[in-house]
Image (cartoon, rainbow, N blue to C red; front, side, top):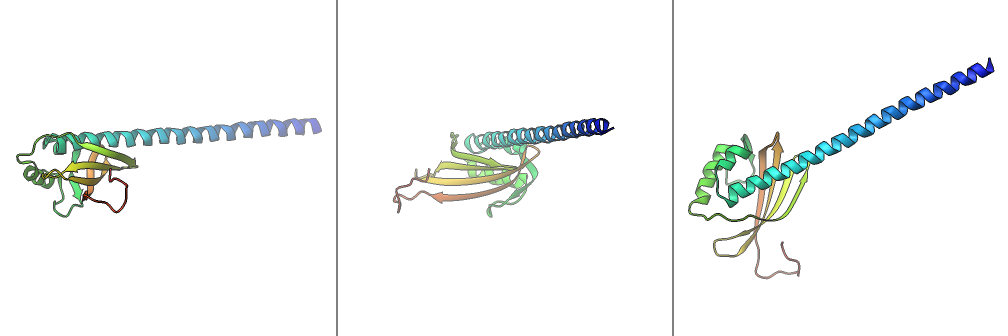
Length: 163
């Protein structure tokens, strides 16, 4: 009888252990899959923003708005109204007579649904501007935007470049 109880206990431990291992493996697999999906979405968002930025601001192609910007686009730049139509209308004025350029992306980073760009721009007088653009994406479209622009001074209080 003691042998039967011992065997039964041992069998139960083996079954419970295998069930726990199975749950742990499923959990680890689920986490790994979520991480891969998250990384894939982040990389996709970065590509969307880079493609949009070149097409819109480099190529001066207003169809980029229709392709990449959601109609309910939220704009945090105080000089531009909300919505993709308002953004497109503002860009028409910016781009009048402007030549196509290659966008000079200095840095790109992304976290969750946000993509951050650091851009080296040139003013009409040839001086440089450091621009930070932040985009929020949803379902493959840009739905929100923040930006900050800073002229690069001729002299700096330190030896660190802005780019």
